[in-house]
Length: 391
Image (cartoon, rainbow, N blue to C red):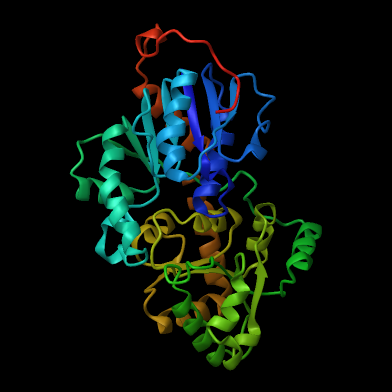
């Protein structure tokens, strides 16, 4: 097979970017006779996999996402005579002359209680185009059972159209015990000896429930004899200090903003944290929960949507709309060493459910199952010369 990978999301710092980068790495690790064509939007990535004989790297130029997905990529599929094209992020090239597979990371826009976190124009657009993407795709991969069930419900899809395939954290996520590494990371991000960790992003604070998280921390801080500092990781998150007027509170001085934390350093950050607090309002597949599990960090998270699906029994579950309940959970975990140990053990036991090697193998099996299987590619493509230039 000739398999194309659409890598427009390769540069993204959020969850889909992490998913895309790990998916490429793991698919190319598989022992297979298939040929891969990687389509980058950013030319800086070309040559990343030049050492692999079964990989061709292309730079596909496009003025915007719509042009790249629906004009440039179909033309690239034609030129490279692909059997199947895979996009790790929500869309499918409707005019591609080959089979298509896409990965969906949530059905938020179709669910009334979840669509409120998006601009109404985005919701209207996705609701209009997503059915066309599903019709184009031979198969659709979903990152959670919740996402699968929601799409079956709202789009009335035929059985077998979607396959739920869990993924996991990168391979370097594991318990870190090396004192030198822990000291290096603690110094790099100016982390205290004990702290509550949360991760969020700018313009995502509503979905990540930052207002209730801060209210809960304020209640915990007021009640605790020796309150543990709160560390909020994420690019530009220091701007929350002014936006939430934390300087006017009695607890703002104990909230730290280390900025963007490099993926290579995250296992040590999880290891240093006393608890990972993630009372998000909406997640299809919360990657940080799987990372914390692999590192043995106790978790407090929400009892809703994909958070409860992924956390299972490996976290203390709370109502994300109840700051008092979140504060009580913080007090319980931070003052009870036995509870910390139990949550850590349950997380480590559950972590193997979320594995990138297993994910890549299942996705490859999916791709192989929908291949046209033609022994003569000219049945799909006319005779033409192979071009090695960018397009």
